[in-house]
Image (tube, rainbow, N blue to C red; front, top):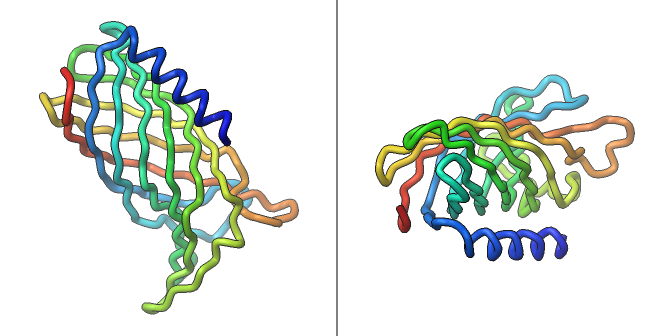
Length: 185
């Protein structure tokens, strides 16, 4: 994990030397579920909030690392299974024009908490999950001055269940975000 963070820092410092820099805050809706071998789950509506820094490498290409508090999970009948991550997506943006972009990139998530919620009660289930999640993101973005909007699909590739035997559970999230540029062009 330390190698990943160190590599990200070096990449960001290197990119910032040659790039136009901007950044801001974002928040939005998560429509989350589990994929893999998990059956009988329904979509959980949750949220994400955080910030981003955008390095314009050229008129057409940008690198955008983000730091998000990301609430995901699933529902099984009346029980909401909520896992909260600190997620670090690193998105490569192809800017179709000044207002629209296509995004793709990897994401790592560090598990902060996991709860089973039922009829106002909450139980800690963090031990049932691995400490990290890894996946890929694909999305579309639009810029309107200082405001921006993103629709993204986050496909988990790692099994997030601890000691699950042959059963594999992955995260699957549709994210809809609104952002506000705080600095830069």
